[in-house]
Image (cartoon, rainbow, N blue to C red; front, side, top):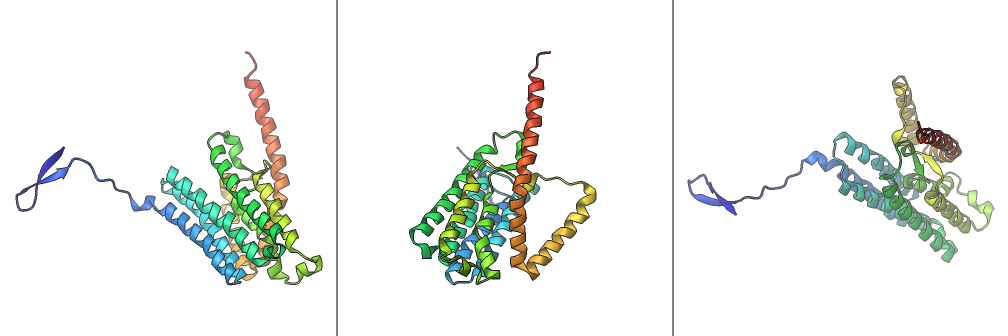
Amino acid sequence: MSVLKMDKDGKDEPQSGKRKRTIVFHRMVPNLITLTAMAAGLTSIQFAINMQWEKAIFAILIALLLDAMDGAMARLLNAASEFGSYLDTLSDFLAFGVSPSIILYIWLLNESGRVGWVAMLFYTSATALRLCRFNVEQKILPDWHKGFFSGVPSPAGAGLALLPLIIWLQYPDFFRGWGHASPLVGMWIIAVGCMMVSRVPTFSIKTISLPAKLGMTVMACAALLLAALASAPWPTLTIIAVAYMASIPVAVIHFRKLKKDHQELEDLEDLPL
């Protein structure tokens, strides 16, 4: 059914009874950030094709930074949506699953033939499985569990997978003493893929809360980290990767303690009064 509306000349003109749908621009900002992260991840492949390894890694780092920003921006602007969640998953798969494996294959894995190709496929598949499981578990996990990831998250997995390339950029002769290093790098990214799909608990930075009095200290440490990345990126990234791997046993111990405490609490609640 249509209604009549008087135009500026006094004539009747039909107007649809349906209201036009609109969207506020700020609700699009998180999705635009996600698309930029995906573009940065895919651009790293172009840098790898041109043998510009430093730029390829920096493009992945930009994608990682933007990936951390889009979720925070969505919460800040109250613009979280199911569409944005699906888009973020696709972006993570391309930026942290497809791109690192192609970079490593162009750099070294192609020298080992089928072994390198299998390693590349396994890592990419592991990233896809890890992201799908994350989306499902977010809806069913208890609140205390949300401080941990099940397995290594895909951005951290991309950083660990690229660690051999980062070490090579510091020490170009490093792999010469290992003989034919390509199968070793293939085994490494297979190991990273296994850590991604494993049930090993790892810390989730998104849920970490600190006392307010430590705010300035944390910001000072962040500034120091940025300065280190700007002046000595490869040693800094290596230290970050090693520190992250060292944090996994700590996360396992902390997770088991929390799980035991909550299990005991549930057992007490089930006792008859």
